Image (cartoon, rainbow, N blue to C red):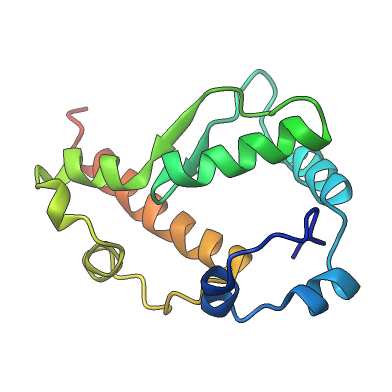
Length: 144
């Protein structure tokens, strides 16, 4: 949870996440500190010689915010311009239509049993479980 860097905010977005500007202003982590921790974590978990790839459910939407904050506060994005969209991966793997890639449908199909909380860390963990399920499916379908 980040300290706001502006007085402007979308009430509906805060309502969905059950956050308040007052709480975030008092208890949130400064964006610079949070982004540095994020970049340090990426460096720590990335195998030597590997390149990090941003993945998310609706990666184009999430990536633009992550990219903006990395550049604004650290001057670079450790992911560069590489993002993998979980919805698009699901669509290609399952040979389905875009209209059949809702979050709830994919969660059910991938047997991820946690509800969508709109809490960033919990949502990221849930998305990682979906991604892991799809990667396992890809591995099972590969000819050896």
